[in-house]
Amino acid sequence: MASPCQSCGACCVSYRVTLPRAELDTSPGGWVPATLTDPYTPTTACMREHPETPSRCIALAGTVGQWVSCTIYAQRPSACADFAPLAMIGIGDEACNEARRRCGLPPLTGL
Image 1: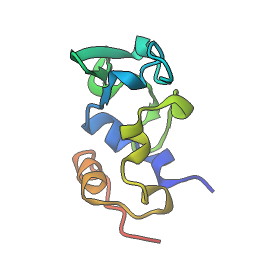
Image 2 (image 1 turned 135 degrees about the vertical axis):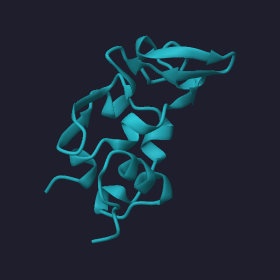
Image 3 (image 1 turned 135 degrees about the horizontal axis):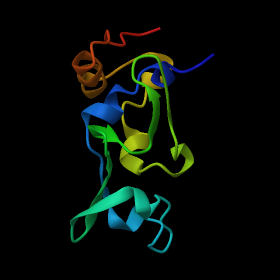
Image 4 (image 1 turned 30 degrees about the vertical axis):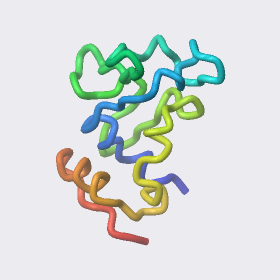
């Protein structure tokens, strides 16, 4: 059974992800593809936005609210991995449900 996240993607079009540059694959021990980020501060980067859809993460594939996937799921920033940890089982938190509201989707309220 697919996770509710795989039919959502609202967080990936609502929030821009900032991450420590230490997570970039150009840093020792880093894993996030640096080619998909832009510099932000001397110690942080942010995920690029899709060139045709501002605010949409460059790594998001699919249609929000129908079917989506992260093209770098195994290499995603820790901020993404830590976001709304119970959403995958149908329990959204405040940030998850706000992103869903912005996209016209109902909140995740539980199983």
